Image (cartoon, rainbow, N blue to C red; front, top):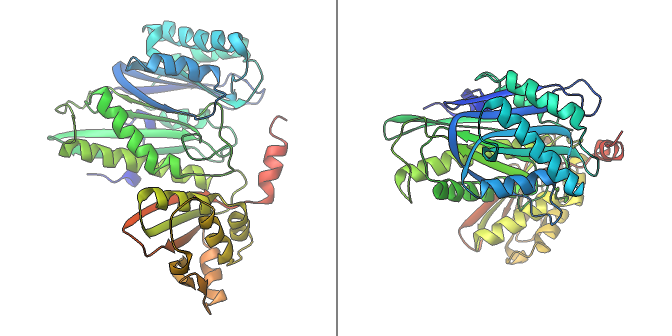
Length: 403
């Protein structure tokens, strides 16, 4: 089957999915800022949401509706988070779904809603509602790429991924799009992401596969230690591939699980690569840890360390910052056993300095993707986390975010 890198279409790659966009002028700039994702038939739906106690109105509406396990459309706006707006925010989020439902001719309870942008400002509904109608009128199987652009805020490029697999003689497609460049930290507080698939699968199995995929992908991404009020990942499966329903821990489920994880990982890496102001993707791999938990804690701590991130930006092979971050992560390991590599260049052995080549280390630090490897030499578990370097532009972008 085709690999994830050779397919296009994003959220409209799978059978029966369409998307439309509009330029509503929510932030008074000429960019696409309304996206509408639509399945021609009702789909089973599952989601994962921000761990932040402060949750935006669209999350509260979507969480309530998705608990029933069914959805057919998702309406999304960028430029305004519709967060911390009280009862008015809830009313506006519901009004967005009502407008989409009327335009599509489907029940309102089957429409989910998401928003991203500035917190604490009321939605300009005089712009949003006409935008929703415009997006509905533009619905098309070719609309995936434009939808990925419409949900962007400080992103510098749209993020899409698609994978195809064969299940019981039927081609199953999984597509997705995401946005995110700042306010990103593990435990599902990273971004907006929407996954669509034509697989036939029960909602419980879809939810289980999604949770496992998130643990290995979006929960291993960090940019700036901030967890947003609006982050959500929603997956819709409409069954139009015609495969025998995926159930339980079957081979078909494992194949679907692996492919879903591949799509999520591709999107997660794009998010880290596009971190606000970033010039480099940081990939941290922990090997031979005592447990998955130990490996994940250490990998995330190193990827999220401001000192490590600044050292990568400055192309400084300061491996002491790496082992320091692992040490405060809560991971169980013996620092006297740890080997550290920058790319293929070993810079520490058994927790101590080596006479390594600064020139060779600099070659790896000059790469677009900087690979950091920690070998704990204590067990067989491993994990990978992704982050980005910390640059002057990160401060500039966030100092000017509301302007």
